[in-house]
Image (cartoon, rainbow, N blue to C red; front, side):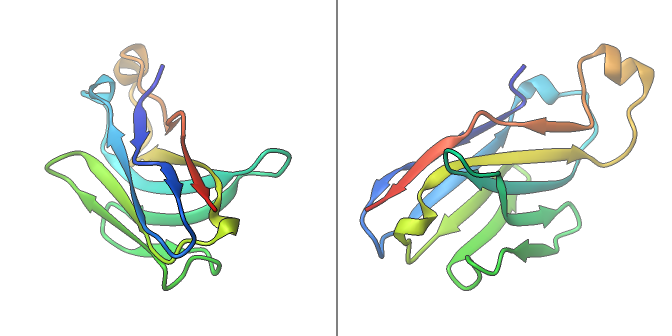
Length: 129
Protein backbone atom coordinates (compact mmCIF):
# COMPACT_ATOMS: atom_id res chain seq x y z
CA UNK A 1 0.00 0.00 0.00
CA UNK A 2 1.80 3.10 -1.28
CA UNK A 3 1.49 6.02 1.07
CA UNK A 4 4.23 8.30 -0.18
CA UNK A 5 4.96 8.91 -3.86
CA UNK A 6 8.36 10.12 -5.04
CA UNK A 7 8.97 11.83 -8.36
CA UNK A 8 11.50 14.06 -10.08
CA UNK A 9 14.32 11.61 -10.62
CA UNK A 10 16.14 11.29 -13.90
CA UNK A 11 19.49 11.41 -15.61
CA UNK A 12 21.67 14.48 -15.37
CA UNK A 13 25.27 15.43 -15.99
CA UNK A 14 27.64 16.09 -13.14
CA UNK A 15 27.19 19.61 -11.85
CA UNK A 16 23.52 19.64 -12.76
CA UNK A 17 20.42 19.86 -10.59
CA UNK A 18 17.27 17.92 -9.91
CA UNK A 19 14.33 18.48 -7.59
CA UNK A 20 12.73 15.44 -6.05
CA UNK A 21 9.21 15.49 -4.66
CA UNK A 22 7.64 13.30 -2.01
CA UNK A 23 3.85 13.50 -2.08
CA UNK A 24 1.75 12.29 0.81
CA UNK A 25 -0.80 10.03 -0.82
CA UNK A 26 -4.50 10.55 -0.21
CA UNK A 27 -4.48 7.02 1.12
CA UNK A 28 -3.12 8.63 4.27
CA UNK A 29 -6.12 10.92 4.66
CA UNK A 30 -7.46 10.35 8.13
CA UNK A 31 -4.04 9.33 9.44
CA UNK A 32 -1.90 11.44 11.79
CA UNK A 33 0.27 14.18 10.34
CA UNK A 34 3.92 13.48 9.63
CA UNK A 35 6.32 13.87 12.53
CA UNK A 36 9.06 14.11 9.96
CA UNK A 37 9.89 13.13 6.41
CA UNK A 38 13.30 11.74 5.56
CA UNK A 39 15.03 11.15 2.26
CA UNK A 40 17.23 8.08 1.93
CA UNK A 41 19.16 6.69 -1.00
CA UNK A 42 20.41 3.28 -1.94
CA UNK A 43 22.65 1.78 -4.56
CA UNK A 44 22.57 -1.92 -5.40
CA UNK A 45 24.59 -3.98 -2.97
CA UNK A 46 24.78 -1.25 -0.34
CA UNK A 47 22.68 -0.30 2.64
CA UNK A 48 20.15 2.47 2.43
CA UNK A 49 21.72 5.69 3.69
CA UNK A 50 20.33 8.86 5.23
CA UNK A 51 20.31 11.95 3.01
CA UNK A 52 18.16 14.62 4.64
CA UNK A 53 15.23 15.07 6.99
CA UNK A 54 12.68 17.75 7.81
CA UNK A 55 10.58 17.79 10.95
CA UNK A 56 6.97 18.90 11.22
CA UNK A 57 8.17 21.80 13.34
CA UNK A 58 10.68 22.82 10.69
CA UNK A 59 14.22 21.77 11.68
CA UNK A 60 16.24 20.10 8.96
CA UNK A 61 19.28 17.86 8.90
CA UNK A 62 21.63 16.66 6.19
CA UNK A 63 24.22 13.99 5.63
CA UNK A 64 27.71 15.46 5.49
CA UNK A 65 28.07 14.27 1.91
CA UNK A 66 25.23 16.52 0.72
CA UNK A 67 25.53 19.56 3.00
CA UNK A 68 25.74 22.76 1.04
CA UNK A 69 24.45 21.06 -2.11
CA UNK A 70 21.01 19.72 -1.18
CA UNK A 71 18.10 21.61 0.32
CA UNK A 72 15.01 20.03 1.85
CA UNK A 73 11.72 21.90 2.17
CA UNK A 74 8.04 21.21 2.55
CA UNK A 75 4.83 22.68 1.19
CA UNK A 76 2.07 21.74 3.58
CA UNK A 77 -0.61 23.05 1.23
CA UNK A 78 0.49 20.50 -1.35
CA UNK A 79 1.33 17.73 1.16
CA UNK A 80 4.74 17.55 -0.47
CA UNK A 81 8.36 17.51 0.68
CA UNK A 82 11.00 18.55 -1.81
CA UNK A 83 14.68 17.74 -2.10
CA UNK A 84 16.52 20.26 -4.25
CA UNK A 85 19.78 18.70 -5.36
CA UNK A 86 22.46 20.94 -6.83
CA UNK A 87 26.04 20.38 -7.93
CA UNK A 88 25.27 16.72 -8.44
CA UNK A 89 28.12 14.24 -8.47
CA UNK A 90 28.39 10.74 -9.86
CA UNK A 91 28.38 9.42 -6.31
CA UNK A 92 24.87 10.83 -5.86
CA UNK A 93 23.61 8.19 -8.28
CA UNK A 94 21.11 6.04 -6.40
CA UNK A 95 17.47 5.20 -5.89
CA UNK A 96 16.01 7.88 -3.64
CA UNK A 97 13.26 7.03 -1.17
CA UNK A 98 11.25 9.12 1.22
CA UNK A 99 9.95 7.89 4.54
CA UNK A 100 7.38 9.47 6.79
CA UNK A 101 6.70 8.86 10.45
CA UNK A 102 3.45 9.52 12.23
CA UNK A 103 3.54 12.32 14.79
CA UNK A 104 1.96 10.17 17.52
CA UNK A 105 0.94 6.57 18.28
CA UNK A 106 -1.99 5.36 16.24
CA UNK A 107 -5.44 4.74 17.60
CA UNK A 108 -7.09 1.37 16.93
CA UNK A 109 -9.46 3.09 14.51
CA UNK A 110 -6.56 4.54 12.55
CA UNK A 111 -4.93 1.11 12.36
CA UNK A 112 -8.14 -0.36 11.00
CA UNK A 113 -8.17 2.46 8.48
CA UNK A 114 -4.76 1.27 7.28
CA UNK A 115 -2.57 3.94 8.87
CA UNK A 116 0.94 2.93 9.91
CA UNK A 117 3.55 4.60 12.11
CA UNK A 118 6.20 4.49 9.40
CA UNK A 119 5.61 4.55 5.66
CA UNK A 120 7.73 4.61 2.55
CA UNK A 121 7.48 5.45 -1.10
CA UNK A 122 8.69 3.20 -3.91
CA UNK A 123 11.59 5.39 -4.90
CA UNK A 124 12.78 7.49 -7.81
CA UNK A 125 16.03 6.85 -9.66
CA UNK A 126 18.71 9.52 -9.91
CA UNK A 127 21.59 8.95 -12.30
CA UNK A 128 24.49 11.38 -12.53
CA UNK A 129 27.05 10.88 -15.28
